[in-house]
Length: 600
Image (cartoon, rainbow, N blue to C red; front, side, top):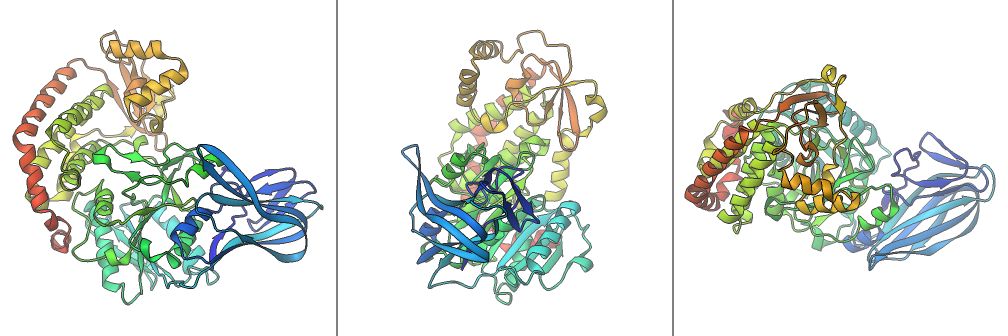
């Protein structure tokens, strides 16, 4: 059974291979070497996760098969990290003189951890490699059919691009292992897709009111549930509409599911998120909810470095998988087990906490996705806090009033320090709406209320002309700053403790006269970068949409007023609201609410 293909693509992003000497690629199908050239698969997308394959799968044997022509020195390595020491040893290989298209096989010893890769060194001119893959033998290969559950809202370009790729690679490709084993379900919340031209026996498009990502994914599960027996669906993959799909990720997921041990049958498979603007940078590889103070596995790893590729496969605690790519067993698709109605954000967290019996990750199972912090729309401040409180009410009952008082101070302070004063009101509104309890959540007209939340926040406009005359400042990497500890570590690394001390003593420059010059920063700027700024433009580098903001000392009193009002809610209504959510939780994930919302 095929486990993993080797991608024979030029290494433009540092994720496919490493090489020395003169060689060339032909149509992503063949690598042609000059004498002395070396090529190796010690990279994120081509290294073989031998430890995880052996841990999670019923495999009796693993072999590497390489199709060669010419004379090579072949080396196969196993690499692991032991006590923070990078350990590499050769496990197979030798000198090979191959006739045209001859396949050379190597048995790979079973390993409990680490990754395997191979290298080729050409001994003769014109030697070539025209294919390679890892294969496994199992006595219990399962029949698997995957249903993609995609929710979209007016992102026709992204959605149609992904659908065309799926058709080319799998749906219409009889040579693919996934041919006949993939169904695509698209929920169109924007009602803009041409259903008649898209829909067929493998692609199913459903028009839906704009009930957010939670409602769109819930509708997808309902549609899948109605046909899963007839279509023999065994697993469902949640996938965002604006990702860039890596076809190999779907193939590896399919292979993993086919030989998965029974003890892992109820686990979720979490695809890593790689940054779309820096394709080698990992944003998240599964995470721990931690009552909303998330701990992201592998955040900020530069996957061009092979040591990070190996470390990325080390065991890490995870309890949720985000829905840019999340594979679940179809057994979870039930009318009483749908996403809760939170519109957007944390619906994936809650669904994982409720259902996942473990989280599996693997190098190469990933998508490229825009980083949300680079856009930072105002409505997110509302949903992030309100939905965090809803999830914590059920899964983190120890998140009490004391912790919430600290959380509210930080959540209100951050918009103040970013000069985003409207967002402070949305943070307060999130707390107030949580305290209204689950009955309010079930009865509110979510689409209309969402528009009200948007109207209370900042409206982005085109700032491209304005930026021509303004200095654009490089911001701190958001993945490097998640706490005050990170700020101190950065100051130590940059030998900038004097500046950090000034920022602390002067409240980030608010006690000093502001700099008169307007400067521009990316939308996800950390307040530490806005020291002594008086006027700034925050903008999204991709769309060039942004907002112009000014420092206002009067807003400090608004902050204090909102915090005092928040304390009153926390000590008078928070506990009652939390208890109501705990008592009525089962009413939030049944099909009755969603049917009412879809038909309203």
